[in-house]
Length: 361
Ligand SMILES: C[S@@+](CC[C@H](N)C(=O)[O-])C[C@H]1O[C@@H](n2cnc3c(N)ncnc32)[C@H](O)[C@@H]1O
Image (cartoon, rainbow, N blue to C red):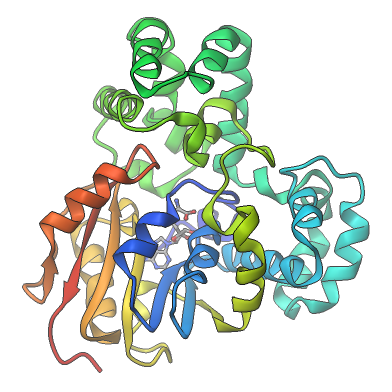
């Protein structure tokens, strides 16, 4: 990436879950070596439920990989109940004691980071990211001004009833401000210092799109079954509510057994030609396009194409900064993309999935 804003790429920006790993598992099924942008680490860990021999967790921000290292070491060390308490999804008063058992398993860079940030560990890293803290405030604000409406929404007996509650209680002029706040460029630029703020379409349009996405989602799936909707509306998760795929009760031991298949790597997508990945046949790209203009977007895809085995599959998420794919080698499977967008429970993303032609490495 060209001149990344240093503060952002040296901070813990994402820590819990704001995508829907079921989508990537479906889009990349059958891939044997997957490159996955790390972010919160949730998609990476979810993808350990695939048959891939290797999942390479790539992030330009070493702090996000330090978070993943902490999660990996904690999963190795703790059972599921202990892990949920360590993260802060369940109550826990022993996190620093748990950390004492975990820290020797960490690579040196991650250990240094977490030794300096024990306060985050003490209060639970799950909600320590900048975005999670914003969503936490948003959730507390919603609870204060519309607690009953949020409860009605999260307990709706059917999708139809949920959509009615949404229209009645969250329609323009009522809770619009709280929802729109997530899309305001002022929030992105000044509060979050998010480089993606530079590529938003403007406060009104961003707010309009987020509101439309929530309205569409209210007609598509039950919010209480989506960890992303739960985080957006309640500002937190709980052990018996919706959780990302890898944290669901039946999956924890499989994830733990899959940890040796995970390989962390610090670097940018555009650097992939120089990074020692081997030929990869799956790419989980999240919404990297939110962070770049067309030239950097093309450079990132060049990196992906350089590392891609012929016929490799990719899954990209598009938030607001939609750009055309920069090469005819990148084939879009429109049917698959639309189908995945329809069932994805992360509310704000469109899915673009397909294959990459060519000789690759
Ligand atoms: C695209 S962001 C979205 C966050 C996402 N919702 C998540 O947490 O899974 C995911 C991560 O990608 C990283 N990132 C963005 N553009 C990148 C690039 N071109 N190369 C490598 N990492 C990148 C950011 O540092 C961030 O941690």
